[in-house]
Length: 275
Image 1 (tube, rainbow, N blue to C red):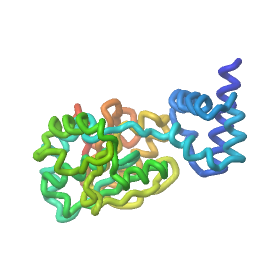
Image 2 (cartoon, one colour):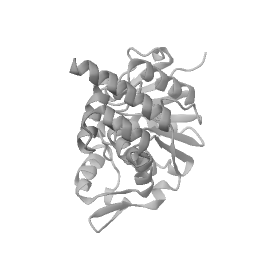
Image 3 (spheres, one colour):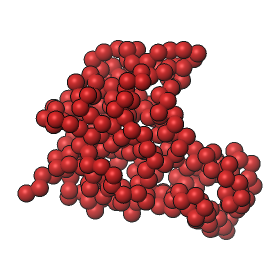
Image 4 (cartoon, rainbow, N blue to C red):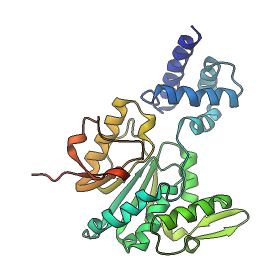
């Protein structure tokens, strides 16, 4: 009975967030949302989800902290190095045939993946012809991404990931350490645009050659996964590339026929050519 009441409260809470602030989490995985909201009510000192709903309606200052629970903010530079090695060794040779490029990092969180690709593209001589789009629904995450400042204690992991991804330089070439933080070179974002965009409700905004959306779809239900993949399909150029997370797949997606497996183990797909 308690679980049933909780399910009703959560449904009403998600409706309240959507109606009040136009953030739509109603198509997210139920288990994931419930786990994150349990963390939120505990941290925010709310006895029940209904109490949290009341605060959502009457206290706008709660929204940024609530978004930090409901959106995915876990990442690192060159996370899953084999993925970036595959981009470097298999995808980049195709991208080099284009005079100009656009790359979309969907669900960019605090920007680690976008900076990883910017560094990789610089090392491969593609940076100056590439425009990078980093999108997320969390304004605080986007501000952090634009700042490009990360905790210094994370740098050893970033450095090892970069090396294992086939990095051709030292990662230290790209940041300055000061006051316990690593500040990444501003030139890495001179070709980057960070912007609010929702895979739940927004439309295609550009034609791109590579979409990297990793470890985001696992938090969506099947219908929302299909919507997101449909957006990527409509965004990609002919023979464009889509990169997903290690636990994600197009296997059961209604748009699967539009893609061919390009690097199976690294979950990189390529749009099929138009006959």
